[in-house]
Image (cartoon, rainbow, N blue to C red; front, top):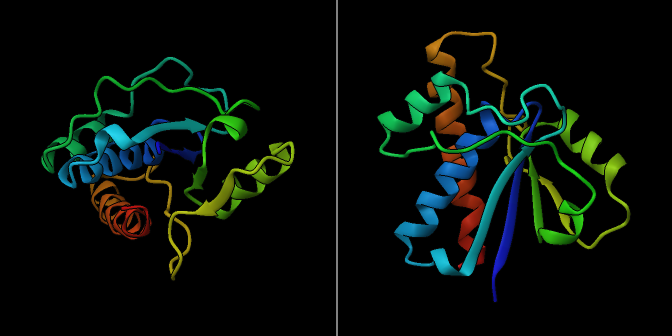
Length: 149
């Protein structure tokens, strides 16, 4: 059975591409990549078609993960049918996803289930914010994956 997981942030250039890359790497390490479909998207349209933020690409590469070929896209209604779990990076995106959900069976949830519940958006900060975000997302992805294996 294939598990389909979608990671969502605001513009799909910082947090959700990192989450997609980290989760894919963890699934590959577990030898289960064929059992998963992993993607990311944004709730907003600003960056559609663009690669991830160079700082996200750099922090992922620092940790041995290549996300440079990803392209930003916006969440659409079909995502609620095509994914088992839709994972929001923060409360604001979770609220937006809940409003868009046509009543699907997709499980909507936050990535982090303990304080801090929200993965902060590093877009307007410096490189240190991207390292902090990487660490939060990695811990969240590890916890998300455990019961799926």
